[in-house]
Length: 58
Image 1: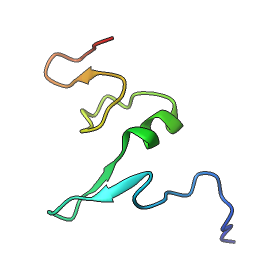
Image 2 (image 1 turned 30 degrees about the vertical axis):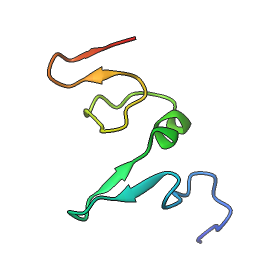
Image 3 (image 1 turned 120 degrees about the vertical axis):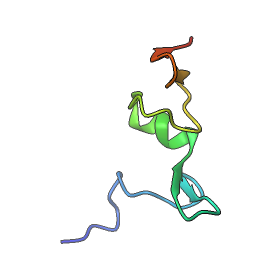
């Protein structure tokens, strides 16, 4: 069953956008809503994760 009022539903333009290459890119707002860093080196990471060093900058 599909629930249209699902709080986990992603909203284009708010939680993500599509890059010119066609990839889905999550926004800072989405990362904060999720509540933790996935350590994937996301473009809009609000937690300061650096994929090269594997550390989180505060």
